[in-house]
Picture 1 (tube, one colour):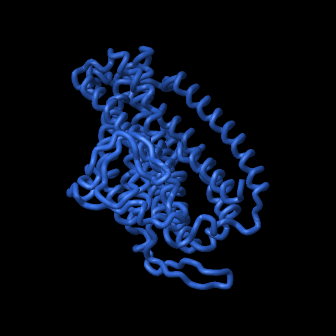
Picture 2 (tube, one colour):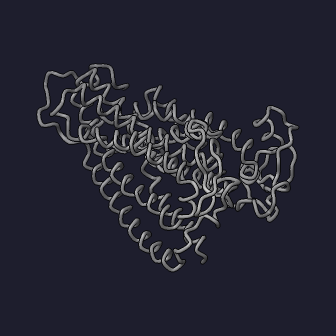
Picture 3 (cartoon, helix red, strand yellow):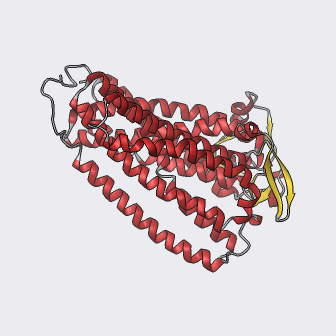
Length: 455
């Protein structure tokens, strides 16, 4: 394999593995704030046990996210040195802001969150929880800004240096609020809420099926379901806004996502495949795509026939990954809709088939996250910075294919080990359940007496 293919494969592997963790930590940060807010109001020991349980889960996820994220930053300097030099002024400023304003905030208060339960006042502990949640979200903000700039560059000019051309910031805020930042950020954050809430719902459903920790599981389920409903609805709203932005700024990606070979009204393909020309075949509803994009079923949309062959992404993978993401989103919405009806009727707790579906549904947002990320990145090809720098031109000049292959094999083995350890520790912690508090109070009323559990 060529140096480019190996470098892209290595980055895809390390990035995909890393991306299992940030959405969970972002979403769990919000859920921890909600849970601790309930504890501040009730001072109920069952709520406190629930909080401490999910804090332990959060700390495990946070640790793996940090460890795997650092690797990506080193890869920019080893495999993609030309890219790092070309966009260092822009990409480096976003990563620096992420470190200063997000990572330090999150990690600085994490110790209080994990170890400060009996060492600081409840209000100070709640404040630390809010700061950790805010830091997690800030991390997403700056990373998405950096990646969105690669999709829709703005606020820069190209200058010549002794080492070649280089992009320089001329308008910081234009760079930050480039044409795709807000749409992509809202989609990423709401996806993170889905990831974490489905994890909370899955674990809660597991406890209900096993008839263990039932009061805690019902309250945890109630919180998780509420966040899941909001996140799932927002996914469709923000997803539509993202599609509008892609159709406007990245027509080649849009055409590939829908298998739109010839310019004209765009249909909506529910499932199928694309042929060698990039045309979709399968279950297609004519003109609905144009209706959704422009409220006009006759509105022509640019097809692949107007995109030079050398500027087209790999259409089949982009088409299939995009539709996989949408399918997972529809499945998530369906499961949550059914579970919500049963929840409101008070029959969810005894519906074993629905609880089993909720346990299994934890994988859906993770698959959707991966498929959506790959769609966005593969749909931008052959550009690493859209219409500015090709991926083939962004490689390091001195790194050879055999070196990348060796490190790829080692990373694969290492990440298999890390993945095994993570799931082993996560499974062990979930099976152990919430630990008993050192000094439970007999004077605090139960959750059921306070009306926090729906029978």
